[in-house]
Length: 165
Image 1: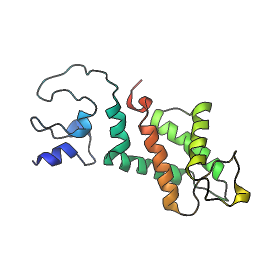
Image 2: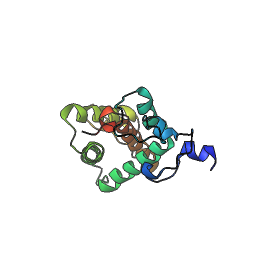
Image 3: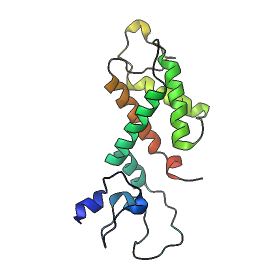
Image 4: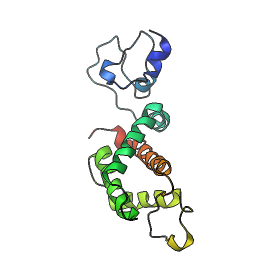
């Protein structure tokens, strides 16, 4: 098996079944301090290092997963009748349920609103701009998907996402 295939581990399969060649650990497992594959390990070390968040923000696997989650959010709560704020709030709630198993608190909801407001403020005509409005791209589905994918990737990069409670 080529070493590149093992280190990239770029397939849709569980890491339990991930092929591990001697002395070649897949990048996805190395980032999360996988134990030595030739030794039985009863308990894993608990670590929190920047490379773990960077992996979740920059890997092609995380990108594909974030895009799939964004599509799920958009499909579950489409914008109907121009009411983008209600759809955005429902999507944010669903994103938190999927990523963390809970609803966002007030501070997280406010941060999400700020993210969307700052991301694309100039796509609306002046008369529709408001500092209280959650702004979503409406010109193309690709812009909307890209924005929600970025949001999902940001959720993946949090320490709460990386830890089991």
